[in-house]
Amino acid sequence: MRWSALGFVAMGVAACATSAEFPPDDDGGTMMAPDTGVMGCTKCGTSGCFDLKTDNSNCGKCGVACPMSATCVQGSCQCPAGQTRCGNTCVDTKTDTTNCGKCGTICGNDAGPVPGGGMWGCSMGSCAITCPAPKSLCSDTCVDTKTDSNNCGMCDNACAMTESCLQGMCCTTGQVICNNACTDTQTDPMNCGMCGKQCGGNTPGCSNGMCAAFVDHGPMHTFTNLTTDHYITQGGCSVNGNDATDADYFCKHFYGNNCSVLAGYKKHTTPNATYGKMHKNGGCTSNGNNIPNTTCDQGPCKIGNWSEITQGLNNLICRCL
Image (cartoon, rainbow, N blue to C red):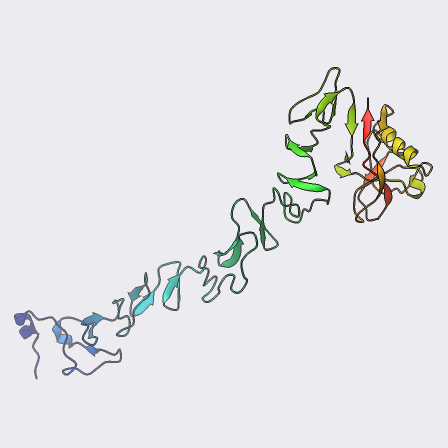
């Protein structure tokens, strides 16, 4: 049978030839005759005639569909700029949690739930845990560094056993935050009973949260940014082996000659080796920081947290007039 382009134009026909008239091509369809005027058109079954270089449902071959958002370019499915084809999907491997960095990398696969409510995510092609506000990631756990005693203020900053984490600061248990600092409103004359209440005049001291003519210090004592309730009295750290003498020595040398010790102090052993401890200078260890404006025997009174279990006194309260 002879074909005539003029005959097709006269009939208004611009359709594909049938498979009976033209043999199948390598793309699985039937190429249309060149003189039909529809170049590159391939009949795919009964679906119609398609350009396999540009058709998203028959890209390169009949029946080959491009992924959603992809475009058929020169017979090949092309994902949008910044995306990669993984299987039959176009994804951004910088952010996709099931194809993070490369196809098939699943973030958090078999890792289980993240403690503290965190979620696995993909950021810049790397798997990472994201935490809900206001939490932060510390050692694969989401924590609130304003209240977490093991990560207070920052990761791995652990508070002592006698401290709590308040607004990201390790404060002695029972203290509160006033003006971004830890304080005991029971004894602080600048924050007596509540933050901002100052004592003065005939009652310059603060006792049990009320302004008074005296000032109580203790049972927790803070010097050089270290806080403890332990005063060493073992061996040469004792004045004469008598608890009453040692307690009185502590108040007068650490706080002043106008101070005396209140009843209620008791024997104490540090619960761990790095527990804070205070001691006099002469006859005792040289470990610890010098406390300014104090004198204990031949030098300044001391406070430190070096590694050693020691015996001494705690619950020492010094009342100063």
